[in-house]
Amino acid sequence: MKQLTGSMPIAALPSSTAASSKKELLETIEWLQREGAATETNLKLLTAIVESILWSEESCTRFLQCGFDAAIELFDITSQNWEIEQARSSPHNPKNWDRYKLLEKTPHQ
Figure 1 (tube, helix red, strand yellow):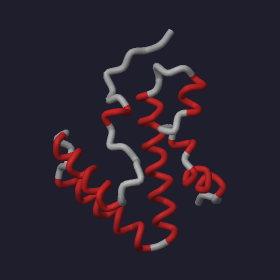
Figure 2 (cartoon, rainbow, N blue to C red; figure 1 turned 180 degrees about the vertical axis):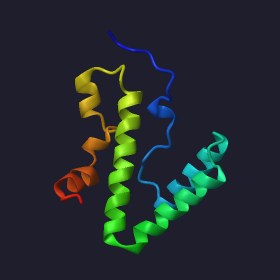
Figure 3 (spheres, rainbow, N blue to C red; figure 1 turned 180 degrees about the horizontal axis):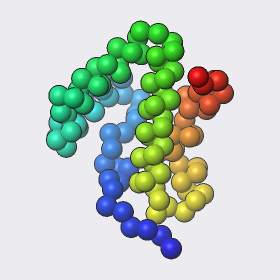
């Protein structure tokens, strides 16, 4: 039996398109503001994430792993009413993204 959720549909999330990364980041911040989630803490964390990516390869890998864990959790919640094959093959599924596949092959500490 399929469960009903009150979670946000994937269509409501900022899309990952071919738009420039800077534009995408600004759109995400604007989206957070509209949704009331652009708190001081969240914006400081976003800044720390961006800075950590530039700091070292290890920081970048740890950030990616954390980000993919969160993205997979969100996808699993928002797609729980989908058919299994539809969810597995969806381009919205982070496990289908090339960067995730590369990260999976990298040994984690």
